[in-house]
Length: 248
Image 1 (cartoon, rainbow, N blue to C red):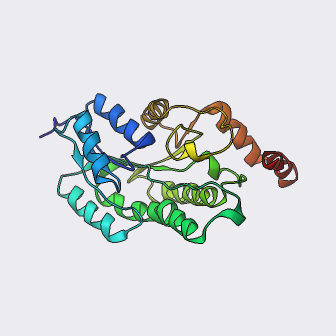
Image 2 (cartoon, rainbow, N blue to C red):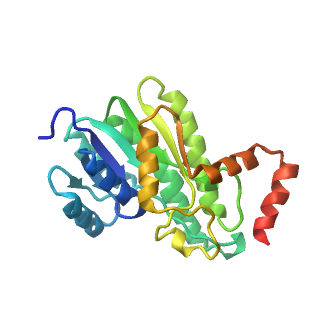
């Protein structure tokens, strides 16, 4: 059994990228981890890497409500969870006329509908005052070219988490994670230079530090996020010409 003061953290989307780096970071800090993603093999490899005791691999598909409900039931049997961190996402860059409709539907199902499922089901396993952290993106701050479906879903996630913050106030500590460009297998599909690109390990350190503070949003790297927050604050007559330059 874990020590009484050891945190129990459920990371969803833990098989790769930022999620896997978070698992390694929290494991080094002594947390008990429940690691979820669709890829059972990658989860098993990660659990073996960080140490099988007391960590658990629990495969699931966030776009499949039944799969997630089964996972929630399994986690409930393990006792209250201190944090649920939802990082699972799908991404396919391209202009709007290049995106396959089935691929777009899949991105919506994983990124937005999956986040909705998590927002409904995760509170069932969290202790009173536990933390629910959902991953948006700086791509959701403003409609940026060549990422329309991904950007739109992340804008929806940001809106969802903002409303959850109010609805669950006093019961659940709701947080929003807004990463910039992180060097993962998803962003490696981009065919443009990504400004302020950072490693998953640095992203994980930023997230862990931010979640241990009191601010609602954890956003990084700030030299990029603050510029995009300014873009979002501008009126359309000023903001849209700036984004037009990104197309060129």
